[in-house]
Amino acid sequence: MNLDQLESTLEPLFISWKKTVPNKSFGDFIFHLDNHAITKLLSGSSTPP
Amino acid sequence: MLKTTNLTTRKTQIKETDDLGLSPCIANGQDRTKFEQFKSDSNFLKDPLSAELNNSLNNFSNDAVQLLKFHGSYQQDNRENRQKGKDKDWQMMLRLRCPGGYVPGPLFIALDELSNRLGNKTLRATTRQAFQMHGIRKENLKEVINTILKSMGSTLAACGDINRNVMAPAAPYETSGYPAARKLAKEIADLLTPVKAEATYLELWADGDLRFKISPAENVKKIRKEQFSDGIFSGIKEEPLYGQTYLPRKFKCAVTVPGDNSVDLLTHDIGLVAFTNKNGSLIGCNVYIGGGMGRMHNSDTTFARIADPLGYIKSENVLSLVQAILALQRDYGNRKLRKNARMKYLLHKEGIDWFKKRLTTKYFSKEIESIKPEPIAKLEDYLGWGRQSKSLWFLGIPLLSGRLSGDKKKKIRLIVEKYKLELRLTPNQDILLCNIGSFQRASITKELNQVGIYEVISKNKLARQAIACPALPLCGLAITEAERFLPKIINRIENQLKELGIKKSILLRMTGCPNGCARPYMAELALVGSGINQYQLWLGGSPNLKKTSKTISPENELRSTRVNA
Image 1 (spheres, rainbow over the protein chains, first blue to last red):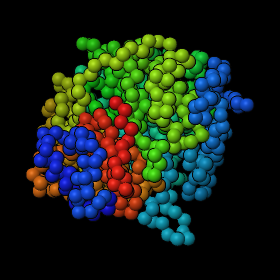
Image 2: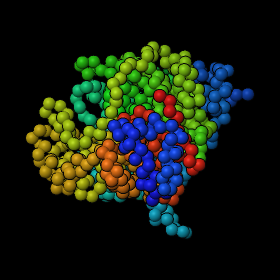
Image 3: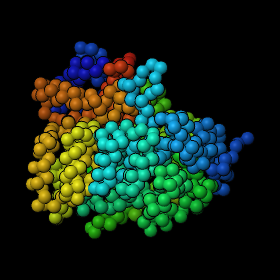
Image 4: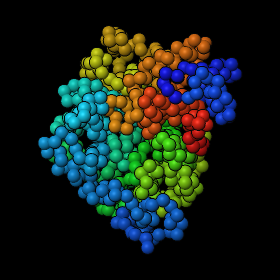
């Protein structure tokens, strides 16, 4: 990931975290997502990592 | 035919059939690397370092540099000052050994003076609770180490293939098992101090002055005698525990109390959770083994790993067990492939059952019980005011990436000197000023306010807990920036969370290479340098450092570190 694309890469993950499990930590949210779901979220970012 | 080495004991010379399938190691006597031979030929970490100390060159040879690590120093050059056709800007990094992060006041004052006069005027608190100094010229190295020794400090075994600084919760609490955990960390540090290498160290840096020799407590001396017993004995009487080749790679230990995971316990070769009775005396420890962070890019055979639970051990046998585990890694750790030489690879390849069986057959005869239940652990940062005892307080001061410089450094030194304080360094690269009387709190707050320190303490959790390695320009392994970029990265993520209306914090870590000095693979979000302005994104660790994270490969596939607990 180019460091310039940090925000655009993280945005879909952050939004999904806020929508689905706002009371869980970000780490736990990611940990309980399967790899396919994370990849899908990341592919929705403006630039792939 | 199997080769035998002089590093095996009588007992281990009897080759066991199933050892043949193991990686090349002392126990099976298979071929070792030239580097292992080099350590063996170094006359206990002396040659060629000794001869090069007094020559007129401004840098050490590659061979001497390897030995220098065991003495606590890395040779570096300022990569931003490199010019074609010109000599590099050679300088030394010096790392201290501070079990549990303890830094007596006079030592801190000496370090401050040394860094101003002979270093780059900064001090850096490391992620293993020690101070590092940068920018020391070769010709000044002896003066610096000698002064550290005279000020009750040491740099022995701060780097190299040996047991490194032993960690423990930095908070100076006088209850809840904290004193026992700190005491145990100091005992382990003393127990695993090399014998002949310490003599070499004192010969080179203190002209052989034995007054600076580490003096273990009586109970530690007793267990050190076991270094001559079957299994534990390396076969080399001068260096009974380590032998002439020391360990296959670095070795890290930490101690904590139930519920406090400030030390990142599961990232260590040995992690101990100390249980105490009502009086605060140690009754036993849960033992975790085989953790480690370092990995390499594009090498799936290297990975971060969290430690496996080994079991519970009664207090009277804790030190013997620690010594036995180290001896097992000495004999069975990979001596052919350094990238797979950490104990975590032995655990990964052979499994905890194999390890336990070998341990209890050859090295340790006491009972290892089932692991005891522990409360859910937290990552404590101890920032702000904390009550040390009925009459004393401590103050945790955040240092971004552990860097102490400028007015902040000057002020803290003045306060330490004026109020006769001692310091403790946290694994989060912050400092605790300790032994503050109730009546001194207001004055100290006022003085710190003058340089803006006190306001920083209230900063939000993301900034408080984020850590980074030094990376560019001095670290020879760095691929990208880390420490110098961290403040901006913190701001960017904080702003993004704010814009999205997210109030929760995130545990953020950043490193300039995959070796893992800032333990990135335990963070919820980590950036690991991989190319020019390029970083791997690691996600999914936990706020209390209990599991490792995963990354996205260039092919957009998720790759995990080994999740084994």
